Image (tube, rainbow, N blue to C red):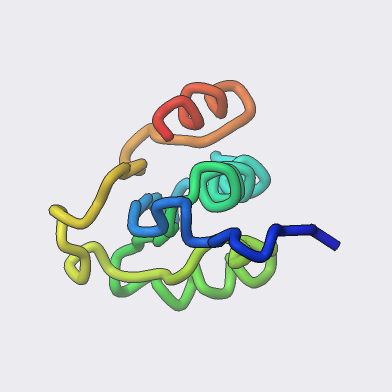
Length: 113
């Protein structure tokens, strides 16, 4: 049990900040565990809302992938990039050719938060 004084307000942390992370960083050659660690740190310790983006034709694939590897724990939604307004995003971790999220670069990615 976590004890909080009666005057404590859980909304003291700025819950409006938004992290967007490419869903492709959850699949090989990236590590699903590093993806999950990134979203956990962002959500729990840095108080970001976390969204993941994937091309519209791959959303079903990544939805299944997230379920299979327990990646939904800290991700609010999986959307197509076209559904996102760039002025709402505070931090974006993009995928792309050669991009991968592994134990070797996890500290660099977490420093972006």
